[in-house]
Image (tube, rainbow, N blue to C red):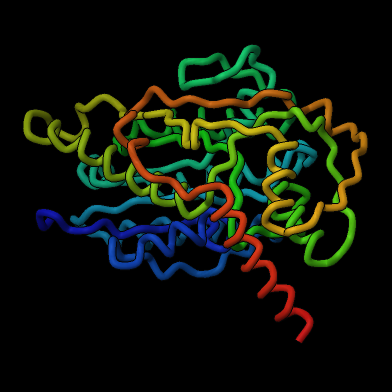
Length: 328
């Protein structure tokens, strides 16, 4: 392995909100694996593609460093348990394909995108940090915890794992067909001149993290995990090292209310958004306060983040261009 060699990187879910920004940040920073499209709607075929691609990653990396960023997952708070079971089987298929000899396993790092809101939803008094108890309120959160346990068990094979419990993501590229993403949904409603429905109280507190900022955090976490494992190579063999599994909250660590979000959007839109407050069974699965703090690797949080108004403006411009292209 060449000293300082950038890791060959496989971004799973590269078409999603986080994945596409991870790929963008990787340009000039590391080589991205030219992976085939995963047929997510055909689980059996998708499992084969993921396992084959995992093996191809290891073969292409050879004796060099490699890393996987798992951003895949179409499930949301109201999704069925069956859909989460299918998603979990695909994660397992990829991990089985990443089975490597100890020396090669130790040259890799695996990042799992989890959900802070999902796992802490019923945990009690906020703010939550990495030591807070987890208590999901919905199948979505339980599915995230199951995935976390699966990659933790897999790490015994010698590959360091970082589990990122991520705040509420927003930004350019969000899939509006998924019933989530308050900022994007409100921006789309404004551009389409229609009312937007909100199913939670206006005093609900959330931590809104701009997706390009989160992508930078993800890659910094991978670099940090690799540097933490590196000194062990000098004194021990790969198969004798303890598994390295780190849980890290990725957030702005500054929660704001839904009411404050609407007020900021009003200033950006230069008119009041049309809001319809409603009730939904899913509302009972939402915590009022999801304020977050990170106590793990705090040096990675010493950064300048995109301001909320700037992030909203970029999201609005992206949606405007996407809606115009649909209409042309």
